[in-house]
Image (cartoon, rainbow, N blue to C red; front, side, top):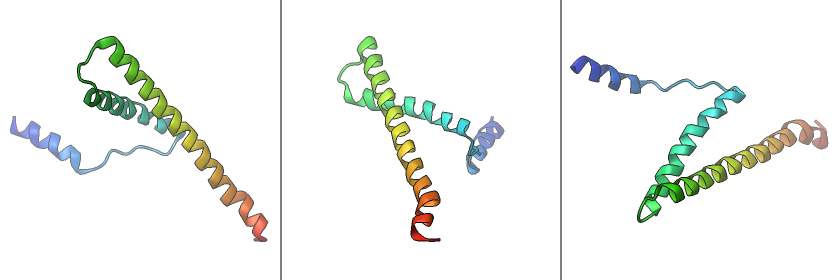
Length: 91
């Protein structure tokens, strides 16, 4: 019993390796779902299944859409700074 607890605790001493591939961005989805559920659960007085899941799904979609827009904007800024700006500055 103690060995099992120790091995579970020991697994938290090194971070999980997640690559830098486009597929690794999909790890954002379970985290976003958990954040949406917990946030909505703390904001409602009484949890009723249908409205709760509807509001949670709307919040989940909003967060994912915002992250996608932010990623596109940051990618455009990075492209401009790395590709276009040196040419404009004469480098």
